[in-house]
Image 1 (tube, rainbow, N blue to C red):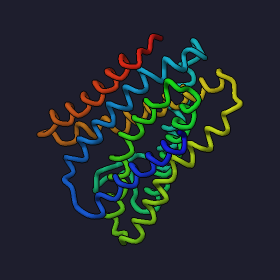
Image 2: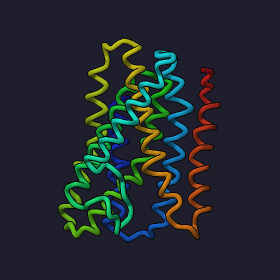
Image 3: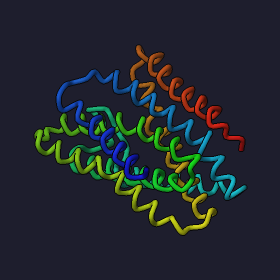
Length: 240
């Protein structure tokens, strides 16, 4: 099962990144996809990951979440992980730094997926969240490289490498945690929840407000993501 899901993540990331290589999309559509991804990630964090980690850590769960949030914050500040979708962004360079930043982003997300494999009730939720998030992320990744003037061959090679980051990180994390205690797994899940929280609130949600005339559509996309995760919460009957 773990190999099948990793393969699915690879293809979702690859297909999302391949779309800008064959046609040009309006940026407003990308923002709607991003808003939907924010709802998915935020719902996953609060409805599934935090309750699951709380069972193992109790009152210490907040520390794990804070560590994950701050680690990703500092990682973003110094390694340019932010998935900037603006061509004229003044704070984020293009080209190689973008590739490094997006790849680190994916490696960290892989930790969340890899740890979730050890919690059967959490695994499908985290997988779905990453699946919904990384299509638009990969779309933004290749769009930026395209604007940066990369050749089709270089963009294709970068996309292939980028697509393999989550499966590689997930498999490494999973097999590293097989013999770890439930408390240890709880720390990893809390850490991952902090990462999801940062990505949704600091990286993605601001994008919803970029286009003022279309804000309502972005808001609806975000709300749809939340509603889907809420429905799944009641479907899986997580009585924490």
